[in-house]
Image (spheres, protein in one colour):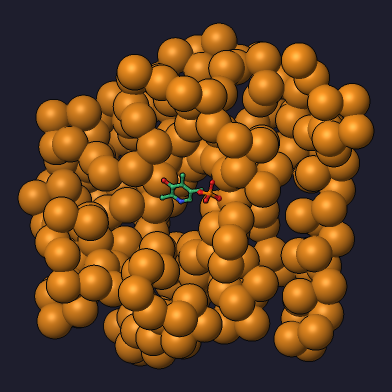
Length: 228
Ligand SMILES: *Cc1c(COP(=O)(O)O)cnc(C)c1O
């Protein structure tokens, strides 16, 4: 049964928007410098339509087949599709065909698969802040080399860095590390100054450390449907 007192989608979106604005202001930043991407994985396309009618233009997905189907179904809406999941090399070209921004470039072989002489796609390099290689993202010692390979590739425009805060570290400290790595990237690629970091439970910390792109799921969408 639906709990009639539970806040709905519009209320949750509004609440996140005001928290984003408050956190930006508290850090002396302009809320307009921060893009909130609503991560809609596991939710139906109808939820994305609803978000669109509430003024959302940036949506994030992490699984290729699901993202591809939703992007096709909603192709008449002006949405920007952000791919935030791990990219398999053999799916790279397909993901590139509907994604406006790929947040998870994490290895040179993927750069080769994504390169194109016909069009340009925006991308972030994902950095792994843990010691667990399975979590996705390039290890810090290999970051500079990956930056160079993105810069050398045709058809990729490097926006900056993406990261997920580890479970065992205070998010604010983790995001401060990303900010520092971002400065290093900027010394190699002056235009790559953006930071994709901050999720439902840590976006205020991310804003305090300079996040420009937040990837927020459940705080806006509510719990994800069970899948199997
Ligand atoms: C699912 C997901 C998010 C959003 O997570 P929430 O905790 O629901 O806000 C952000 N980034 C990535 C890479 C994700 O896979």
